[in-house]
Image (tube, rainbow over all chains, first blue to last red; front, side, top):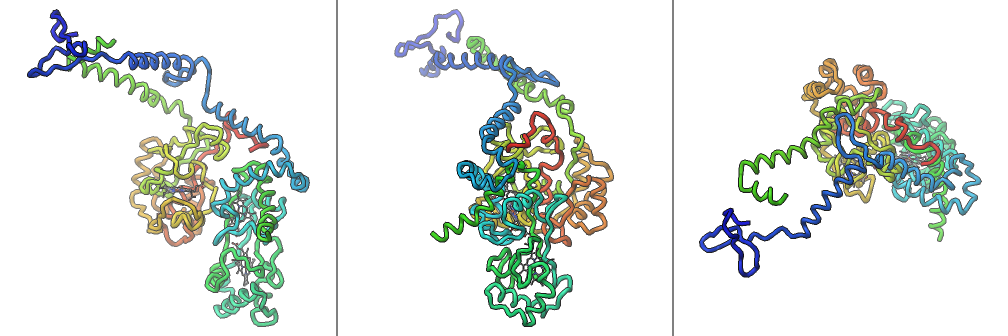
Length: 297
Length: 246
């Protein structure tokens, strides 16, 4: 349409399109029509939005909203989808609810299905502390060796996971390495002696009848076992195995004796289901054998 | 339709008016539901507001831009429920001004991270993420061991109270003292924090040193509170995650 109503539209002879009718010192602007393609798409989106308004939740109506003819609800769909995921695992996951560990470990087909899922669960929840390969790091114990604070059978591990260690759970496992120096239970010289003794223990060169040995028997053996072999299942590690949670160098052992240690393992009772906890327990208890097999290959 | 537009374009004031009308429709559709938000979002009975120390941690979370990599909203998707637990409900962030739902995840969602890790882990992780997660690409925040400035906390609580967060005048007056006490379980004020904010509040030396109140104390207290302010998401029937299977 031209800018001047009534007059004949000015048509560009080359393209055949109308111009806007304006003449800027001999330059005219084409009034190219809107491409049909774009108008069609625009029309389709409008049609789609009307259909969507009818079918899906759309308009706010004050305290409520139009629910749509399909009655869809994202929350319900997510829960249903999650339910499908859970149902898909149900056939083998159900075995972990009861927690008959011997039967589970013996069932190879079950283990082949379950262990990859357990590994993923471990990465999501445990790897940040215990490492992706479960070998731990300073302050976080190695779960892939066969030295245990509380015990390495699936039932004991499941209980550790459920209540945690020094966690806020009411039934938490509790373990504390006392601050012998800070709380003035031992003299500095005695701590120096014990530091050397603990180092000697880990290399198998300790003399149980020496001064260090006596101090150890009097102060430490009640938790760490006679000769520091651990295994009492009360959270105190073996000191003879050469594996360290915090470190086996002189300064770290001295710091352990001076200031004490109290590692925290969170409780998983609220975060993971009973079956997931049992699944992880089987996984973790099998790590030591797996790593030994790898090492001896 | 196009012809109408063509003619309208030539009346500049008419075009302005039409633009305002069109934009307002879009605006109203988005904003109108907020007029009734008080009635559509019910505050759960067991919901508590953040303590002053956690609030200070929230400020640090915003200051450091943690939200650029971490969302605080578990989406309504099956896989999210599988990994993080029940999806986030609007009521869970009703006391958040501003909310920190976020839309980008370089790291994991943090909506329910409270209690997942121990305090020493958070401290080690924030000082140097690589110390505990060797492959982490999260930046290090070693300066968080600086002392915490509690000077503005009282005013902040008072402001939030005006926005509808149930802080009492008593809470606002004692904000700085409560922040100090929450980081020192053996202090005299620790019991007051539990009285004012509930028994479920964690009162610990979050950074490992009860004698000093640091920004680390605040941030870790905040992280440990995420997802623990109310249990409503675990109680709602439709959201409930079945016990037997994960």
